[in-house]
Length: 97
Image 1 (cartoon, rainbow, N blue to C red):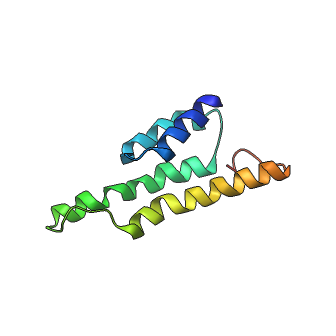
Image 2 (cartoon, rainbow, N blue to C red):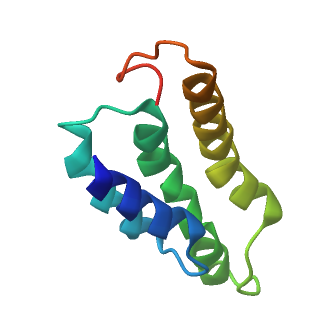
């Protein structure tokens, strides 16, 4: 479990996180199911939108909308998970986080 927390912390706090970096957490999901990490592996695809728009002739820049759609739900889910764990509620591994 500490490997998942360490990998996740590095990924979520890193100033440079390429979308394929988030696939590093997928092997941990076999042993520690987490809906938030599964969601992150899916929404990380939105990180490729600057490259796609650049290929279409637009300037290469990140969109605040795409970044918030990529990271926002995951941070909210993880914050809820931490809040519920601190409050002492029972959280199932596959549904909670």
